[in-house]
Length: 135
Image (cartoon, rainbow, N blue to C red; front, side):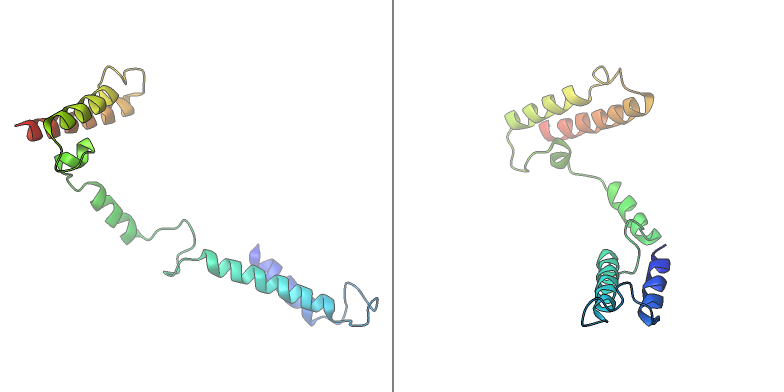
């Protein structure tokens, strides 16, 4: 659709007929308006396009693979519990209890099977991180 508007604008600019014929002393002012609108439209298209040349919202397969690999990278126990590496036992216990109550299987029993499975997996990660830090 965008190419149709660009072609129509160019045809209008090259045609001898004007939208506003002779009502003003400068008869080419409407051509300047059309050129300005065309320039604005094309510059917006170029600004929306990322430097890699992919249209907005379209990811390359390499980018998707890289994001998938970083998503499955093992996290440290501190990252899992959301605490700083120098945290004391009390802070570790507090973070564990907060996350455990949030992801406990009994708390997500009303959700669908997929969410229950994800919550169970997250709860196991939280438990493992807690036991690693408390030892």
